[in-house]
Image (tube, rainbow, N blue to C red; front, side, top):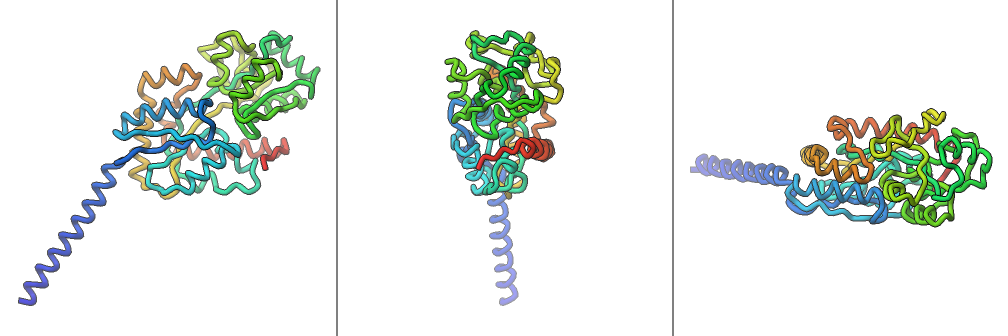
Length: 330
């Protein structure tokens, strides 16, 4: 009888264990069971926020759960990024950020997280070209005339940017270095306020994402000079590249990536990655991104390995540029 009871007990234990494992497995397979938050460490209404909302709408359809965009700007994106780094690694809080996630280590002496080891890469999302634009009444009408004007004016030439280490700030640093002169940079709390001052003629220039510059350029409220990519943009075919203007190496793109907190389960990363790739294949999404001047990356780049490799290379590249410029954000 005792042997029989032991066998029954063992069977019950195995059954319960199996049920527990099945429950865990089913829970993983069901992910997500509630809304997923995409945290954007920048203000609402800005270029990265626009990218996030297009992506979130499409990923909502892919995941079968609402994907919510939450903005947490401040301190060059480090406040929001820290929140994600410290979030529970369950796939319900992810980070959408851009080139600033590669420049932060060089800009901040006491960064409260490690950009390469405290996050799980999911995949690259879009690349946003940069564009050099000026106030509508600027005396320079071509990029060649602008280069001559900057060399003549030097520190009297002003440019606006969305904060130390922002894509616009980095672009302007590269431009100044290439021209072997130093313009005067004016820092704003976002690209929107900087553009407002450019529209009002309070500053001379901006080098910013096409998500910021496309609308005012198309309406003639600013003057376009050049783009910072290797090839011309189909949407603005008449704008030359800075390379064509005789400034090789002045290339910068506000690439965007998607990350989860370190320790997020691999199967959750895979589901998020699959949803991202499905999003980037959607022609309607591509069309919406195009209105911002954003270019979805090829599917093979929307992977954890591709983002990891690109991120590491960008950390090294911009670390050297920022060190040479002697710029610090804290």
